[in-house]
Every structure is written in structure tokens, then in C-alpha cells.
Length: 89
Image 1 (cartoon, rainbow, N blue to C red):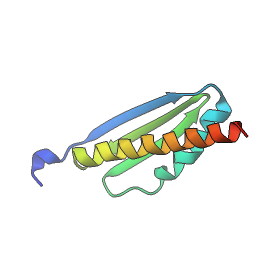
Image 2: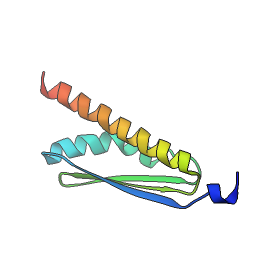
Image 3: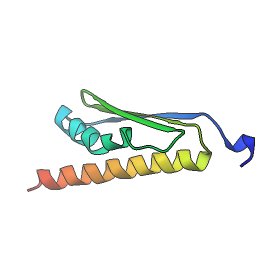
Image 4: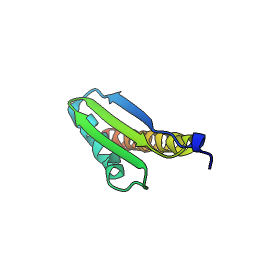
């Protein structure tokens, strides 16, 4: 890997929901990512009221950074679909 492939990349993703309860459910669903991360990657998700905030730091390459964001958004989508399904029961 060339030195230019390694970067200090950061992103903050903010999602707003209709209720605190909905935001809590989504944050709880993706929070396990806060613990299990490879070296050089940090993910911290927190809920603040109706907002779910995720901060990602990546000291690896751009592909890892993009894949991490993609994985997070996929997990959020699955959580939202699950919540929607439960509400319709």
C-alpha cells in the first residue's frame, strides 16, 4: 500500500426521527458497532433526543472508510424496516 492510500478520514452522520423512541431503537440496533472494530477504525453512535449521531474515524484506506459507511447505513435501513414492521402489527 502506498503512503497516499493511508489517510485520517472522518465522517459524522446525523439521522433525525419522528420520536425519541424510534431514534432509541435505531441507535440500539447499530450500537454494537461501537465495540467491535478493526484496528485503525472507530465508530461511535449516540442518541440525542430524536437524533442518532454516528462519528466514524478511519486511519486506513478510502475503501475501508466507504465500506464502513455503507455497512452502517445498511444496518440503519434494516433497523428502520424492522421498526416499521413491528408498528404495523
